Length: 248
Length: 88
Ligand SMILES: Cc1cc2nc3c(=O)[nH]c(=O)nc-3n(C[C@H](O)[C@H](O)[C@H](O)COP(=O)(O)OP(=O)(O)OC[C@H]3O[C@@H](n4cnc5c(N)ncnc54)[C@H](O)[C@@H]3O)c2cc1C
Ligand SMILES: [Zn+2]
Image (cartoon, rainbow over all chains, first blue to last red; front, side, top):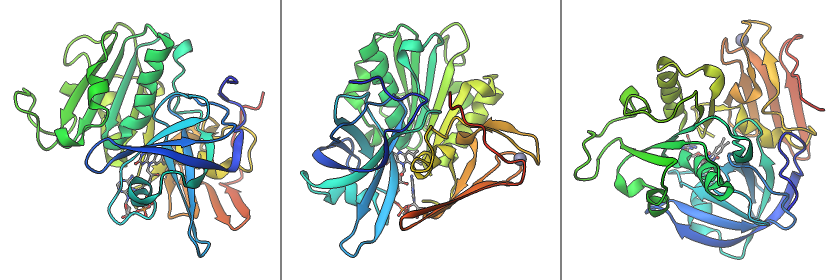
């Protein structure tokens, strides 16, 4: 596979066909979709694609979806959380038949990316809900590249049933660590009372994470991203080391 | 798209057909409030197919992009609102 287009051009600048190969559940409603995009040039952890659907009457709708795993040839993995009354996400999560085609454009984005082979600083990832998807690509990239830098995922979910990638996250070992936060209902025995992310959930407040200033990536619903980014600034993280992506 | 705004990461796809390089790392210096930052940090308001990207510091319009059939309309903000792209 060619080196992924980092800062350069976007090879799939126009729409191209991709085929749905498989759909697997992550939660009761969220689904992982694996697509095959012929000639895919590869991508970096954190990048996304746009997916476009065309109805029989010609009506079109396009939405962005983060890539959940580092490139594997022509295979693209995305994670879709259907939103109520959504035009695109319920169709992708439930109805698009395996074997059917959609159009994709990408890989997209050069700002919200992490390059494992260049990493020297610790990596701190803050996820709200489906915002875990691009951050999972970073953790998977950390694993497959054999990166040595410490990495910590702080992942906020409503309740334990909303957790994506549960067994895979549980299998990460140092230098990767995962801290789960529950906003509505925590599992039995969790000493942390349910509630939104707080300064005490950030590394250093909950124990030393790693020496040095981490590169921070924050992703999730706009409200989560705003709130978490403010907490990071208050905790002294330099603004230029915080990268954010809002899902809306 | 939501009422809640997105950010400039969402502009990567809409701008892809007309730009040769990734736009999200393009650096912007706001002529109105002086904020500096990447295109990824702009606040993007829908609904599709018309997106308006505003300065995170002062809400001045930084760019507008609209897709209409085979056409993409792009307008950049005020006279000093040009984006600097890393092309080499
Ligand atoms: C860069 C980027 C990456 C993204 N990555 C992912 C991803 O990996 N997985 C994923 O599931 N989504 C992701 N999204 C969000 C996705 O693009 C869509 O916005 C989302 O799937 C809803 O689309 P829809 O057509 O179903 O809803 P729409 O028809 O656009 O909206 C229907 C209703 O849902 C509300 N709504 C819209 N978006 C959201 C949202 N994100 N959360 C809650 N309510 C919403 C709207 O206000 C509206 O009331 C990403 C967005 C961006 C900009
Ligand atoms: Zn401004």
